Amino acid sequence: MKNMKYLLLRRGTQIGLMFLYFAANAYGWNILAGTFGTSYIFDTIPLADPYTTLQVLATGFVLGTDVLIGAVIITMFYFVVGGRAFCAWVCPINMVTDLANWLRRKFNLDKEEVNYRFLKRSARYWILVLGLVVSALVGVAAFEVVSPITIMQRGIVFGFGMGGAVVLAIFLFDLFGVKNGWCGHLCPLGAAYAVIGSKSLVRVKHNHEVCTECMECKVVCPENQVLHMIKKESIAVRDGECTNCGRCVDVCNDNALEFGIRSFIKETKVSTSKY
Amino acid sequence: MAHANNRRNFMAKTVQSVGLAALGGMLWSGYTDSVKASPLVLRPPGALKEEDFLTACIKCGLCAEACVNRDTNIDKETGLPRPSTLQMAKGGDAVLIGTPFFVPTEVPCYMCEDIPCVPVCPSGTLDMASLLNENQELDINKATMGLAVVHKESCIAFWGIQCDACYRACPLLDVAITLEHQKNDRTGKHAFLLPVVHDNACTGCGLCEMACVTEEPAIFVLPNDVAKGKAGDHYVKGWDAKDQERVGNAHSQTTTTEVSKREAKDYLNMEVEY
Image 1 (cartoon, rainbow over the protein chains, first blue to last red):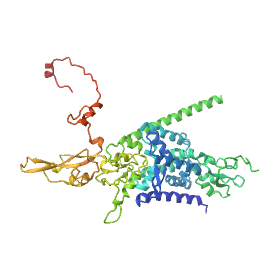
Image 2 (tube, rainbow over the protein chains, first blue to last red):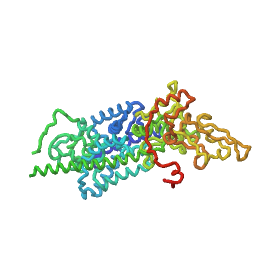
Image 3 (cartoon, rainbow over the protein chains, first blue to last red):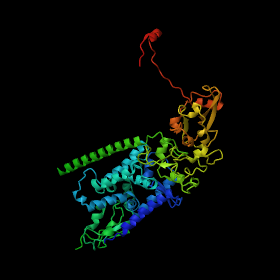
Image 4 (cartoon, rainbow over the protein chains, first blue to last red):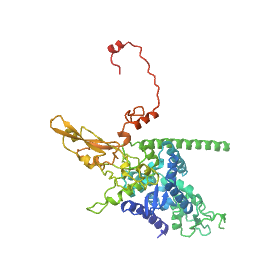
């Protein structure tokens, strides 16, 4: 039995947070009310999605101070814990795309993977900027009109309606279309968090000395380009695209990957070869 | 040589990326622009004008949550909360997704005195200032969510049948809807009791539409932009000193019309031109 510590912790966090959001509407709880756009903890501390906030600001509307404060709080939080920790630990779409990814591995769909030439992992950064441009042009927060993330979250809190089709579409796209297609290639919110977390403190660290090069980590990693140091050197995962999901830490049988605090002072190449 | 190829490759890739971004941007803009066109939707009290509302709403749902969880929303028989007036638009609702709205025939706005949905709005989309009365208190009677409109042909009161369901349902009884008495010439001895909506008092809550007895409501709430005309500043009430001030805002407009060279009698003899 493989270690599933971080996987279970993540599912607990994701489902727990979604339940609190649901309960705010269904039972009038005030622990965590609202949706990602803006929420309040105990009716006092505002939280706001930084990318949504930027889109609305791009339209030229001057948002209320609570939203701006909330966006700053969220940005600072993920600046510390790793921007895309949102993706792995909070976002409900992550459960959908992780399921698609797991099924791909079970049914060996990865082996027939088609090389999508114009769908690169960098597409999300284009979409990130494009979302702001379209918001400014049309006068509506553009990603919020199509975002499967908030559609799914509102679905959980207020009921899905036809919005369920969008979530299903993401599932099918990731399962039969492009591996890690949505979260790893297209999602501009994930891209925004990748930028926020590119210098974050909490990082996965690799110890090359104990690594047996089994490559299990690269198999499970949804962004395995960030694990370029495997087989090479003992450094921390530095890319903002790492979601800090901890799957690599879970599957590593050699304790060669662990969460740690990134050291900015001394991050030198310890060795390029074990021998 | 390899150098030149690299440069050509780089140029081609740049052009491709920019081109695809432009294509995506146009499709995205077109889609966004079309889905925001939902002029027949009723918004919560204090909402900015529809165009600004769509820009400003951050789609957090706090207004809808405050609406369903208000203290007064407990069903006295079951002890459970009743359905919310405010719904968050879902896919397929023909309203910009994630924005709050209400449908009077499903659940009208009950015009809570404390207006729980408005102070919770974090973005400024629901404007508290627009709902303050002279004493700087929140006053739901200041709301302008829409305007009730009577369709005379299907309103049975206009047939001479006695019905005052909308008049009695109105929270601003005898203010927003009054009954106008008229003689029924058909019978010669009965009266019409006709509902008349007053624009300056009607909040657009939709309780009248909910109460209307006809198969499809003969009184219904439309958004202000759709329901109202505008006389413009050239037309002022000469007997109203305050209204007369508006003429100051009127600005002249010069138009030129090509003068017809034809004789007056030609007009009488010519075919009708469409």
